[in-house]
Image 1 (spheres, helix red, strand yellow):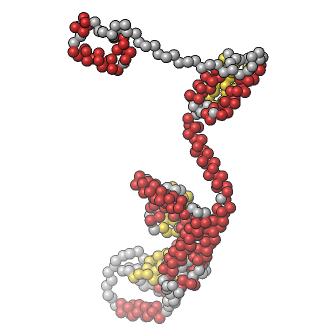
Image 2 (cartoon, rainbow, N blue to C red):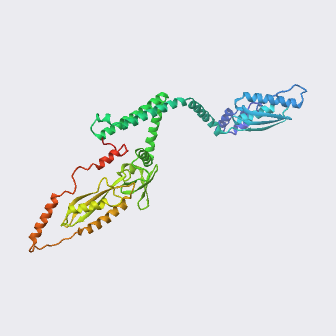
Image 3 (cartoon, rainbow, N blue to C red):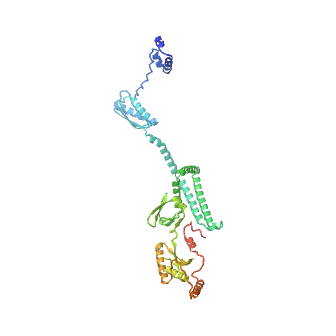
Length: 455
């Protein structure tokens, strides 16, 4: 075989062409051999695997099938990715079933079955692995292990829970004690704050001891740290939602009102229908629904008319300047005492509130038990009866007016008479001036710890 390039071929090839031929020869020796006129060297043929003998010569087809089936299942059992594969051999036909660990393992199982002597056909029904299931299996395994550990630690968790409950009961007892804190301070509000701080400290101490008992203090710190970072990130994105949700938790714990209470919140008056994680729903006295954000409710001044069952009604009345005010007070008080729905204790009361240019303002007070009577209906009945009683006693209730009086004969006598009436009124007393302790008495009787602060 000649290894020289013909002269006429070299003469017809330019310098760039020669450079390209050199690169081709370096990249592929086979191409260089062909270019030089030689034949490429033949590749070594890959030897075909020899068939696997399974049974002795002269064995029956049934024995061959059983031997092949036994050998295949034995091999599959020793390979991790083929552990769930089973072979069934009948009449030289191998049926593979089960699930392989990978697609390549499925092909290897089929190739292995074909190598056995006596196998005519391989029916490959092996299922390829589910990637999702393959990824979830380790997680499920870890969860099962954690559940097993959790079951083993249930007795310890029960003891830790008893520790927390014991400290919580002790904190509740501390919040109810008042006598020891009187030595701490004379300020009622400060004593209440001290009780709450001590109770909170006891609860936290119980939780810490329980975590220490479970050897979970480090885990608790990591969780709190992660929760703090997550809360900081979420707070900027969902500020309003988180604020309303937190306010709902605080409202649920503090309980400034219950369902059905008659309240006034931010000039919205009605009865509480329900409390959700986003808003407080009121039904107004007109039957309309009002949704107030919990953050607004928590920050607002709340007037609860239902928390104290006793409620006072005030009736303001204008009386003529020439009337006997003591008599007016007596008539009005007697009318209120006989009005249905007005309770006898605390008793009704009448006070002179203001001296006007054409009238004197007298205010009548009475108390109503809202558990037995409707405040609005009793107030309406009291107004009607006071009007009728004052008219029956010939007591004038003039409208605001201006008048000009001319001094005439006998005017001096009338002035002296008015002075005598005024002197008589000054000498009379419609009621005593003892400080009113009604509200304080009711606060002492209320079961609410937030308002029952009086000694």
